Length: 228
Image 1: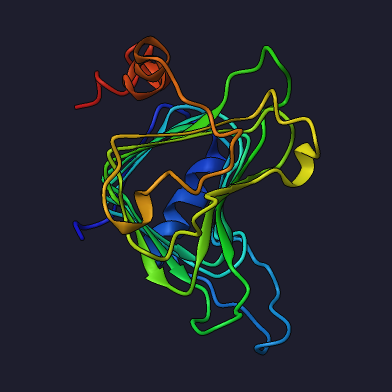
Image 2: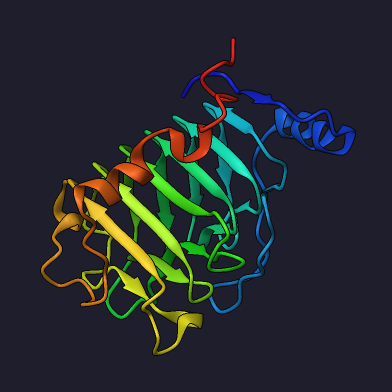
């Protein structure tokens, strides 16, 4: 893991204070027992045009709130069990490790890596994972829909056998998942087998996939590529 650093085009003092606090350590504790765990956010990223390099976010439930705006994460680690990457953000995660802390064993409750939503049909948003890995303990779904417009794409990600075969859950989308975009492409590892996935998982065309995995998904104005 590389040393922590970040870059932001925002001059908001509040946001800068938040990011400086992250310098101390992006780690939070969760309280509870095996029967009851309390959610607590390790980091909330709500500004636009923010990049993280070599960061670690530790928690259990709601670890990283990718709340709003365009964000870039490179070679970061996010550890958790329930919705450990969640929000309305429009973000790309490059070569990031998503580590499940769900308890192992027969009959254990699976967790969820992501919980995403978009604010409207015309609103931008989506979590795109390029490369990296899903690993850890127990079992996890790749994601569940926080609303009926949730958008999550895994591309060339290594998936260990912690991934639940169905892959996804509709959650707040209910029975109408037509607006949900949950997709995988060119992933590897025992957890990437798609034959058992839910039948409403999206199968993107080459053009559709390119729209998500091209860095222009978050960098159409050059804020990221023009960083020093």
